[in-house]
Amino acid sequence: MDHKALAMEMRGLREQVTGITDTAVVAADGLLIAADTADSIDPEGLAAIAAAGLGLARRTAEVTGRGTLRQTVAYGSHGCAAFYAVGETALMVVLGDEGIDMNRLHEEARPTLTRIDSILTVPAKASVASAPKTGVV
Image (tube, rainbow, N blue to C red; front, side, top):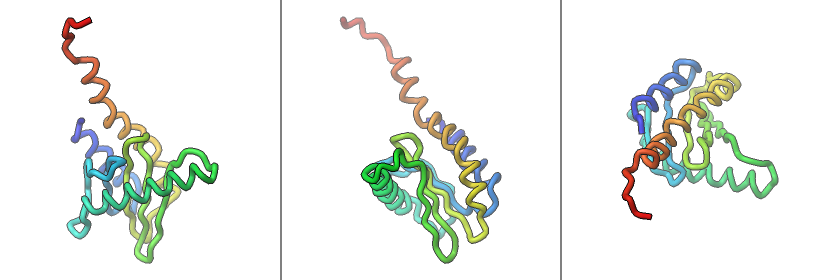
């Protein structure tokens, strides 16, 4: 996995949308892949909670016939937390302050999520393609 490219995508989203305070990319099982968070945020704890929440939201969308989950947002008195599905195997968490423009975030997140999905899935495809041939038939 190209961690530098992943960090650039996370940082790029933060630069495009005023009000983003923290970002993280998390495997669907809750393992942290990458984080750009303040010292006051526990990225491992955020990863675990985000994965659980996204799993619940996915299941809710499924059983209510709402289709494939794209995102869920939790609003608090000091800002919000947006959780975006990245394919079927990961998610991105975006934390924002009270002034974040959620419409802009949703708009800018779509292409970022597509690129992050590509970054996360390229190594698996590349490793299969570059695996040495064993000669076993």
